Amino acid sequence: MVNIAVLVKQVPDTNSKIQIVGDRVDLSSVKMEISPYDEFAVENALQHKESEGGTVTAITVGNDGADKVLKGVKALGVDNIVRLDYDGYMDSNGLQSVLADEIKSGGYDVVYCGKSAADTGAGSTGPGIAERLGWGSISNATEIKFGEGLMVTSPAEGGDAIASLSLPAVVSCDKGSIKVRKSNVKGIMMAKRAQVDVKSVSPPSPTITIVSEVMPPAKPAGKKYEGAQSAQTVAQLLRDEANVI
Amino acid sequence: MTDTIVIAELSKGKINATTNELVTAAGMLGSNCTLVVPCTESSVANDAGSITGITKVIAAKSSVFETYDAAAWAEALDSASPSGIVITSASAQSKDLAARLAARRSVSVIQDVTGIQNGTLSTPIYSGKAIQNVSLNGDAVVTIRANIFRPAENSGNCDVQVLDTTGNLATALQEMVQRASERLDVSEANIIVSGGRGMGTPANFSHLEEIADKLGAAVGASRAAVDTWEEIPHSMQVGQTGKTVNPNLYIAVGISGAIQHLAGMRSSKYIVAINKDAEAPIFQHADYGIVASWEDALPVLSNSLASLLG
Ligand SMILES: Cc1cc2nc3c(=O)[nH]c(=O)nc-3n(C[C@H](O)[C@H](O)[C@H](O)COP(=O)(O)OP(=O)(O)OC[C@H]3O[C@@H](n4cnc5c(N)ncnc54)[C@H](O)[C@@H]3O)c2cc1C
Ligand SMILES: Nc1ncnc2c1ncn2[C@@H]1O[C@H](COP(=O)(O)O)[C@@H](O)[C@H]1O
Image (cartoon, rainbow over all chains, first blue to last red; front, top):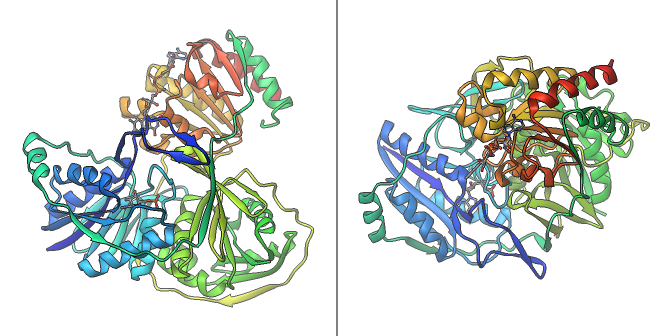
């Protein structure tokens, strides 16, 4: 029986417009959803359970708005849902500390997470937790075979590396070729009634300060040409003006 | 001023040119820069002492550096690195390593830095829809995007110290599956030619390959192309659920410029768009836009490149 954890995070819908109010991003009118790669992490966690037997626990760190994401994955077949309650800024050190503590006390054998979260784009959480736990890890997995340990495919220089990884371990998940399942009505009804196991945490204070959040500098308007013949002009500009060819 | 440590970026067993960019970034974050070179043979580090701006080279020698293993690399490089701000490239492998190094030292990791000004570091958030500026209160690990900082010159001269290191392997490589084509991967290329659904059929990607061959470029694709055509593998996908790239030149052909595609390529230095729809959103981000069908425009582009590049 494998004790499986999967990390899920709520982030703005990727179609949403990001606004700055004052000197911070304002998410008050943005629709939140599960971070795209976390869907692959959940699918891998469920397939691991189906292959080897065990339980899947989804863990998130956030405020009660994130319960929606937990219920969403509950509807897919996750057994337990846990929220580490925190409504403020944590740096990577703080976030990984509270997650590593929870994973240690939960006695998990394997942790799946997304390759990177759609808000930070960082990709730090999986390997960072593994280091804190003294576990092995593979990042950006595109294919996983389950057994006593794991056989994981991930990109390497010039191709793909297929490596074995013994448990306990952390795997961060890329898209790959697996299809993620959809929830059905029965699952959604069951998830509605499910209880979120809410726990309080006290992370170490951040070792960095957010000075400001701003819009990306506007790009100067480009040059636009009509007609195929302009491709010749553009080629010349790439050489003479942009100096890139 | 804080000391800095740069972890050299290697490709094909040699120190990669982005290492010089990392040294420039180190000069903006602190002083007394030590370059740590992960290697199986210390000769790899022989020439590293010439990078201007470093005060010391440590060739961290270990058999664990034969293939990438996150746990062992972090252990070995942590033991070889003095304290200070650690700087690596923002390649997929180095970001993974950086996260572990930071965790080992219980400090924060700041990934994908695209600018440094007066000690403030800028990183893209929300797939580049906004920029976050942060300052460090002490040591940290920082990864730097390629193609942004001017590379340090090679007119210095400092000693190379060889240090034997070791770490515990957590993975065992079973097999390396080489890419089918000789072509560069989008994440490694300085120039990328990408096609979208507007290419019509996967066979038409051969026209992009022809241009790419002239430019020494990689071929990329939009998600619509990857999802529609089996022949176009996900490894070519650029965008939010594909790869994030920032080449010098990105040529988008038959790609509309959806927000999730932009997320993966908007930081490219120069963007060229070829699209028959003058209203396609990609034109708002293109430095050079060509409103035409690719069937008409690519032959002209190909001929022009042939005469320019000889
Ligand atoms: C969660 C999520 C994640 C996503 N991740 C990604 C991602 O990683 N990468 C990504 O690319 N997309 C991603 N998408 C999909 C994205 O929203 C778009 O659907 C996709 O980028 C569209 O691809 P396209 O531009 O090739 O196709 P289309 O939008 O169909 O555009 C085709 C373009 O080709 C032009 N065209 C047609 N014929 C010709 C011709 N003969 N010559 C010249 N031009 C022509 C048309 O004018 C049109 O602009 C994601 C979506 C979601 C919801
Ligand atoms: N607040 C969070 N709660 C739960 N999981 C998280 C959180 N932040 C990050 N993760 C997990 O770590 C992955 C990588 O996040 P990041 O390191 O921020 O790119 C995400 O895809 C999630 O699986």
